[in-house]
Image (cartoon, rainbow, N blue to C red):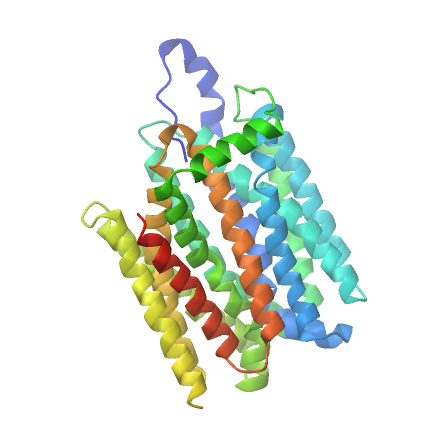
Length: 401
């Protein structure tokens, strides 16, 4: 993420209005971008049973959501550079809300999948533009503080959302999850319309496809960028392989309820918060490459442990969650260091570097969830092998830094 310079005296009037944008609102906007992905996980098994569909078809609501997030990240940024953040954000929130309203009365898995794709294409605007607007309103002196707040909020979202989704689903059913989200998005949209000013005061011409593709290709020519983007993308969304099958694995194999599934996912994803905290403490003390390798080493160890536990017939709730928490800690340590490494490759292309990383992250996440959903056999082996493959690819990539 590019940190803007301090405005000169001649620019002070230009910067005055954007600085009035509410940081809590911008943080909420950004968090909303991924909350629909995680909050629906505990309700997945109940939705599949109610709609009379298979686990594989139901898991497409997770996989295709990730595909939408991946593709949208390449579009919203250039559109907001040309037409302004505020109108593009409002359009994205409107699409997001439409997808939620379509999901509530869905009577077939096909309708639900279409609704989830619409949700992802709209929610992606919140994810991308929330980050961009935080950058817009940040001066050189307070950018680090605001970005740190945003990063912490983004880390907490996947930790809290499954627990909330499990409670709502258990009390009112899976459709109520989308009702809660629709109320949240509608309220957030109203605040954006009535209180959020335009933060992009310098619109630029919309770049052509060739120019955008050229910027991405230039980054991919850097060995260090390829290494960090591969390692970070593999780590960042490989855990979605577990989240996609968690309701079926925990409920069918271990006898957990939908409310307990949400809490179990909370425990696992909380490991990412711990790993991110460790990464913050090590920043400036340990080289980026070394810290990234240490995080990925934890991921490899955890994936091997989970595979050994499942193949030995010793799978239980503690033996399932312990390796997954360790894997999540490794992700929390690897992810921030990988991002720092790839953003340092070419500071003048920080925006393109971030967008391409976001695309790669969600695209690989979709691939991992599709693989584990297709292979799902009621055991933890597909999850363990997928996590092992992801961390193995990341290890090979980091050797090239």
